[in-house]
Image 1 (cartoon, each protein chain N blue to C red):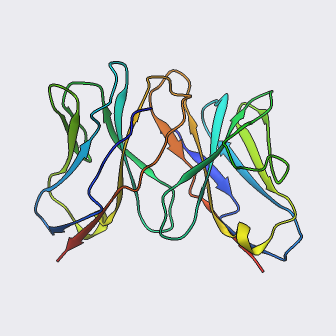
Image 2 (cartoon, chains in turn cyan, purple):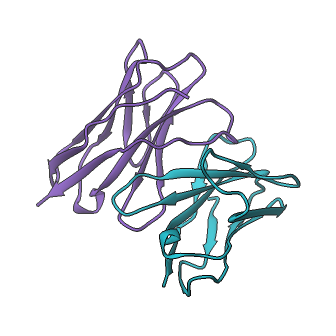
Length: 115
Length: 111
């Protein structure tokens, strides 16, 4: 079945550096992908909608200049956390819907720890 | 998208059926009911979805009331590996639509 691959699964970085997270649809095309963030013991919060070939749509309160999203192809979306700080430490998850089917697939998530 | 209400937590004995309720009283006619679960530190896993008819797959059954204002996810024979947070989400039919997560129900399956 369709799979969404997310990489890396775990990353530690120093404060002030940037981190890129990739989300790939492995055997289907996704014109739209979604990025979520999840803090410990909380639910998933939608950050942004990534649209292939156009600008991402960000949810209220999410800084678009801090969380850069690029969706350059039908199978890849990237989220870059720029100038990361400890408060950005979280679990980041992407998901994509397969065209023509009413099911969405989540990546395994990326745990970001900023020191 | 319609909001959903779920109990915060539930317990279930291993081998017994787990029945997880969800209220979605403001659901509109073209909105589906989706269920996902999230095992600790993993991405959410799709379980099942339905519009108005009851649905069954290899993982679970979904019972939707006739007025569609509530539904129940049934795990027929719960195992310890079913311990997870279960999310009930109501969403339109477009598969490019976003999923808005509530707090979900933490199901603890006990031996």
